[in-house]
Length: 158
Image (tube, rainbow, N blue to C red; front, side, top):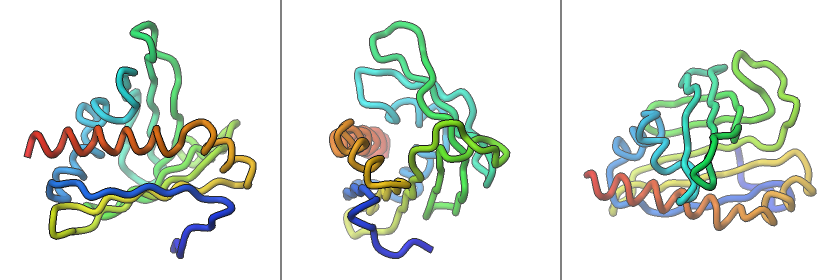
């Protein structure tokens, strides 16, 4: 069980989404909806594999300039707790296979809020250097942007 974020290793972002948890959950677990918000626009996402079971794959490709899609994320789900939590890592790939390029583990939590859903992403890194690199790569802008895109998608359709 995750306690509190370790400021030396973890990055977090959270927001209130003005839609019910079921709508946010559906946007996370339906590959067609997921593709609409997972990468910062104007980039495009393609879900190659999404097996929402522990040990299942989460593989995405990205097209940043409208050209060819290239690998983006090759990860493994660790936990998928209906309507409350999704945990995935790129430390492992599908079937619990070790990854060649481990970088992070993400814990996404959803909880009820009077205005809709409290959405939180807690991203853990194996070292302070990896955390710093992720932050310098634009973690807050990137993860904040996709959370805003997620909110826009579910708030408009609900």
